[in-house]
Image (cartoon, rainbow, N blue to C red; front, side, top):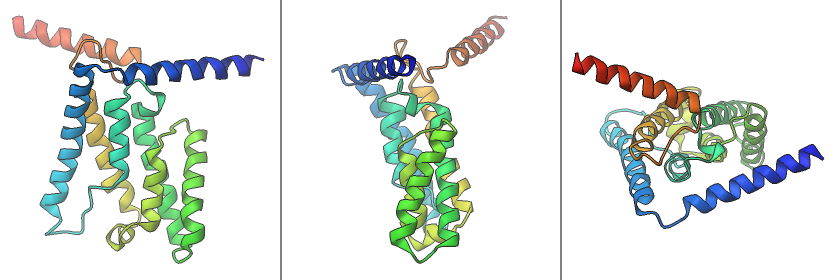
Amino acid sequence: MKSIHKIKRNYRKTKYILYKETLVDFKEHFWAFVGGLVGMGIIAYLQSQTLPNSDMVYLIGSFGASSVLVYGVIQSPLAQPRNLIGGHVISAIIGVTIYKFLPEILWLTAPLAVASSIVMMQITKTLHPPGGATALIAIAGSEKVKNLGYWYVLSPVLSGALILLAVALITNNMAHDRQYPNHKKYHQFRKRIASKFRNNKTV
């Protein structure tokens, strides 16, 4: 019975969050736009600068899906920093590992990478839907991506996710009624740092 009540409570909470996030709130839409523009803009800029001169890859499709969550549905459990970073990194490791062991069997490796990443994200409590795409890109991406091997985990995956997170921590907290992440201790720590900084400036 307790598990049923917990499921119902989580369902009501998720439904409320989705309802709240989709209300016509121009301030909410403005900061979601700014976050998505700046976060993806930095990654796209890095890609445009390095593409002609190196094999570095920064821009992958799953970051677009992550941007929807971390800038557009910021209170969702799936959009929190642990989920953003952990989900992408775990899925990338799984995708690369499966490709290395079974490189030529796409009909098997693609679904295996996605399914395995879902389960591992569930186990580690880092469920982040774009992680499935990150695992799939390691299998079915361009030759440049496949040739990265485990470097794919560090760049573009980890580096790009950290850029999205850094921008989210700034833009999602610019308005007083927006707070990201939804961890209270983070905001208590942030307020202490801000107050110390203001006190030092007045001295």
